[in-house]
Image (tube, rainbow, N blue to C red):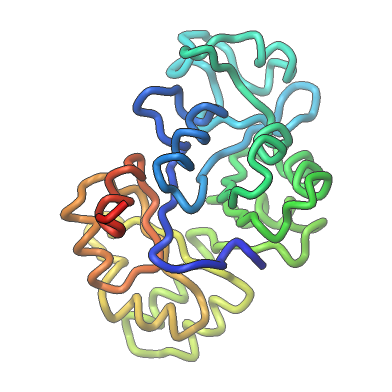
Length: 249
């Protein structure tokens, strides 16, 4: 599995680097890699013709000002919608092909995206450089059925027992809950509950999983989290994180 190869901390570019490029486009991914991102975080939805298209939102309102849903359009129709800077929607297959060495953190956003996302990963022979995740365990499992060796992270419900074990010192519980997961990808806190502490980080890592925290853009917060020992930060500002962890370059 090359997804977790290389030194830490991992710099995971949230939807690419969208400073001078539309998010989740080939240009944003190129800019992120050029700025020092070690991984690309992205999202996929299913199109009307059964393709996995790169998009965070289920509709086009925010990114294109169109009152349409991704699932209503074919991939060809989505490609014709301008997003700015000469960019439009791309398929997951196109992104994997455009960046054949890049490691992708892929969030399966809807059920119809699961099978075509898996097919695109298989066709690109990219399973070793991909991590699949979803807020829905069922969606993730639908995608990983054809990818038994791919890296995965748990859904919220799957993570809860691991968190209980980590906070209470019941490390066997954390190990059982995280068996088979390469990483835990979580915000620093959920409501009043702080998920990321030195204790929870140590317990999760002892269970064999990495700790990836999202979505952090402030440099001081990045440094504080890295000091707690987290393995990766998901950020909209991979350029700032690169400067923090590698100030000589």
